[in-house]
Length: 52
Image (tube, rainbow, N blue to C red; front, side):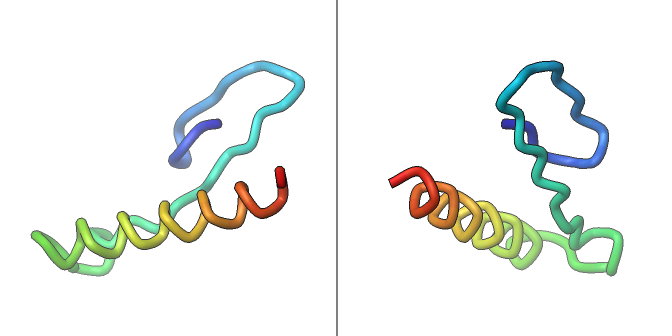
């Protein structure tokens, strides 16, 4: 599993999550961190659902 646009890993079972970067839209501080946290949490939940 990789996270972000610049992360690269070789392998058979690699999933890259190209995440949104709120700071590129001028969102900073705790609001930025919450958006990133919520995005990752939703992706993890979806991955868990797919693997179950």
